[in-house]
Amino acid sequence: MARCRKCRKKADIFIPHHRLPLCDAHFKEWFEEYLERTIKKFKMFPKTAKVLVAISGGKDSLALWQALTNLGFDTEGVFIDLGIEDFSIISRRVSENFAENIGKTLHVVSLKKETGISIPDLKARTQKYCSLCGSIKRYLLNRFARLNKFDVIVTGHNLDDEASSLLGNTINWHLKYLARKYPVLPEGNGFVKKAKPLCRFTSFEIKEYARRQNIEFLEERCPLSPEATRLVYAEIMDELEKRMPGTKIRFYMDYLRKVYPIFNERVEEFLEKPLTTCEFCGEPSVSSPCFVCKLKAEAKA
Ligand code: FES
Ligand code: ZN
Ligand code: ZN
Image 1 (cartoon, rainbow, N blue to C red):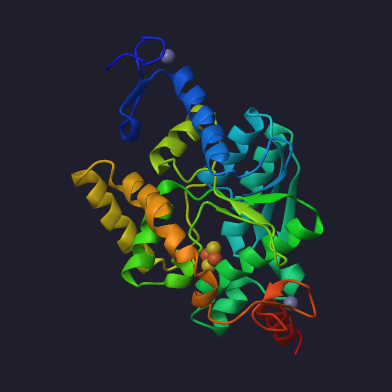
Image 2: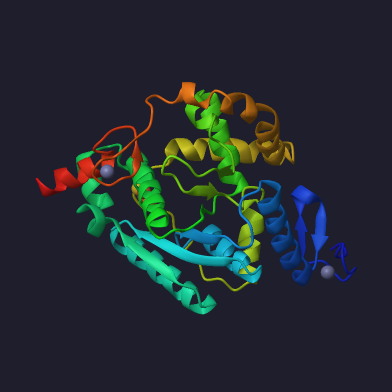
C-alpha cells in the first residue's frame, strides 16, 4: 500500500477520483475539508445558517449530519415517517439512535398524521406512488423547514446519484429537471433554500467515512420502490466509470459549468405551469388545492 499523501505513514485508503492515498486520520480530515470547500464553492450556506438535515437512516444522510456536526454547523435533523411498516420503523430507530449519539435534535414528521395516508395506502391506489412519494417528501420537508424558520434544507444526494439522474434526464431530455439540476437551489416563492453538500463525493467515499466514524446506518433500500429504470442509469454510469475513471465527476461538473447556465436562463419556459400558492396549506404549487391537499381531502372522503 502507498504512503499517506499528508503524513507519509502507511495509507489505508486510496481515493481513485483524487488519486489520493491517505491514512485513517487524514481521510477523515480530507472528507470534512472537502465538504466545507464544496459548501463554499457553491455558496450553499454560511456557518451561521440554521440547517435542516433530511435524514433517512441511510449512510449518506447520517454521514452528512456527522460531518456537518464535526465542522461546527448549527444543525437539526428531520425524518419523514412514510408508514412503510418495518422499513419505516427500523430506519426511524436508526436515525433516532444516531441523533442521540451526536446530541442533536431529530424531528419526526409522520405522513399518516399529516395527510391521513401512508405510502402503502397510496400504492394501493396508484402505480405512480413512487414518484408521488418523492414529491410528498419534498413537500413535507419544505413545509417543515419553512414553518420552523430553517435557512436551508440539506440532503444526502451523492455524486453517483447526481451523475446517474443527470444521465437519465439527458437521455429523456427532461429539460425542466435539467434546468434545475444544481447542487444549491435558492429560496423564493415559498421554497426554502436547498443544498446537496455531498454532490462531489462518491458513494464509496461516504461509506468509508460512515464506517470509520462508527455510524450505524441502514443498508436496505425502500422495499416498495421499483427503481428499475434508475438502476439502469446507475449501472451504466458505473460501467463508464470503470472503463474510463473520472467520468462521473467530469460529466457532472462539466454539466454544472457548461450546460446548466444555458438551460437555467430559460427555466421559466420549461416549467409546464406557472407556480401559485395553495390556498389551503400555503405551500407553493402549480394548482390550488395542491396535490397534497387533494390527497388529504380524498383520504377524508
Ligand atoms: Fe418512497 Fe419507497 S421511499 S416509495
Ligand atoms: Zn496521514
Ligand atoms: Zn395545499
